[in-house]
Length: 154
Image (cartoon, rainbow, N blue to C red; front, side):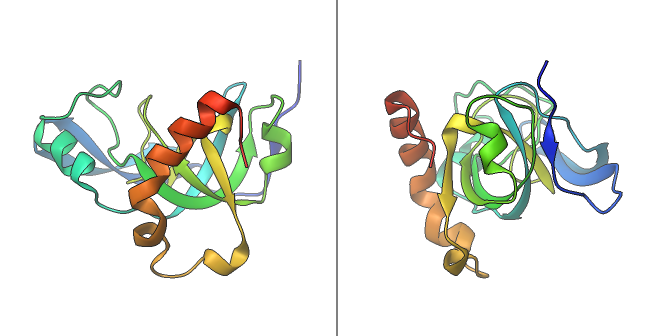
């Protein structure tokens, strides 16, 4: 069994996240920091846009594999903190990434999110700024979905 590769989280064991419990029913909660499974990454979220798909999901009018209760936020950018192992995961720790989170109970409106390592796009350090979520947010989902089918992961 592969060991996970990780950076230090500063001793944190919990994170803050917006949790959507139903249409337009959200609350700020303190949750355990999730652990990535095989082929997944734990990303510390730095920025997350509010896109039309996010607003539609929050209102209950967007079809998604995510089910309530969940942390909303489909796209974002951050730093890979931990890998659950796998072909791409070990090489991603410490890298800046743009992410698309389409499944599971984590999303980019939390301090950390679990993402599929094959749906991350590495970003050069120069792109990390206050506006990164807006710069990359609109196209991250489309990019990640199209590159996932081609096998590209950054």
